[in-house]
Structure formats: C-alpha cells, structure tokens
Image (cartoon, rainbow, N blue to C red):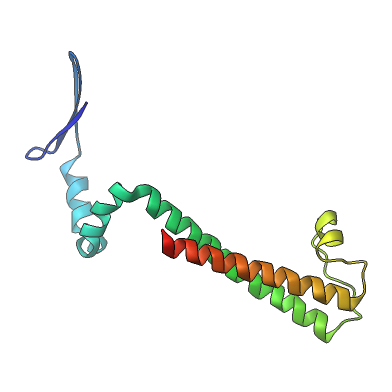
Length: 137
C-alpha cells in the first residue's frame, strides 16, 4: 500500500509491520517547481501521469511520422536524380535483397523510376497513417 502525506511530502510504503519513509529533497522539489517550463505547464504535466500510455503512443507516432517525412524527402531526391540522369549507375544501399527487390538495380531506368515512385507512395501513406494515429491518441 502506498500513501502520501501532503503536508510533509512523505511517501510511505506500508505492508503489515514494515514501514519505509522516503522524502523528496526540498531543494530538488523547489528547483523543479521554480523552472519556467514547470510554471507554464504544471497542469499538463500533472495530468500526464494518468494518461501515460496515450502520451507515449502519441509521441511515438509523431516521431515515426517525422522520420518518415525526412526519408520521403531523401527518396524524392533519388527519384529526381534518376529522372534527370537515367543512364548513370543506380543507387545502391548495400542491402542486396533491398537493392534487388525494391530498388531493382538490375532493371531498366524506367522500371527503377516506377519502383521509386511506389516507395515514395508507401512512405507518404505510412507517414499519413502515423500522423493520423498521433492525432487520434
């Protein structure tokens, strides 16, 4: 059983005859409460502990969407490079299965552009899905 005494800020863990007292040092507590971030967001930060799972999921989906957004810019750059210089050697990642099946390094330049277009669409759809899930949670 976990009890908190609000006047002394003691946290008590009681189990039959065993009692342990822990205190949050007042210096640390005062430093945290004095920060500008805490003063502006005190209500929000206190409520996050009740919705920890939702906050973690929303943050994770937002981060995944941001990474996918950055990777889509990179793949669009590869697409434009393949469009302007189709007879140069294809870009290779070093993963043989990815180069062969996804990027089609042994295929014609038009086929490589079609594959890059499909990769761009998949990345953008995944980004939109993660953005939706981030707003949902």
